[in-house]
Amino acid sequence: MPGSFTIELKGLRFFAEHGLYPAELKVGNEFEVDVSIDTEAPEETISTLDQTIDYVTIFQIVQEEFNKHQYLLETCAMNIASQVGQKCTAIKTITISIRKLNPPITNFRGSVEVTYTKIFN
Image (cartoon, rainbow, N blue to C red):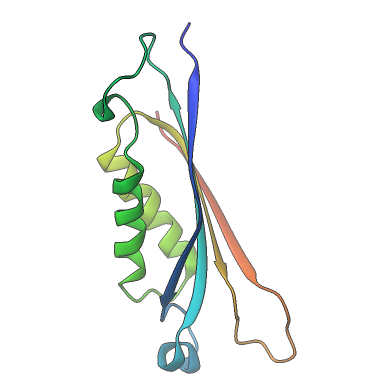
């Protein structure tokens, strides 16, 4: 029985204009993204990139999503999961966490986060 791999990209930082409020569209915000992908390992030792998940491809998908305006972080997370699933068919599950580092909430200190998990058949 083969094992499995978890491939993670952590702490990806982006500046974008995601959000519902006019100030967010005008000023933008900083975001931090984590992506965790579970995939089944082949029985033989991996020796080429096409036998695994290319994390450069994953980064490019996330980066493209942050170049577009979205009103909701949930939309971003679902779009990223869908795009990754189309490009990387060996994925069993993907979990995406998106943190808005400076949410426009009066007297609020901290961040807000959305986490989305998608299971592929």
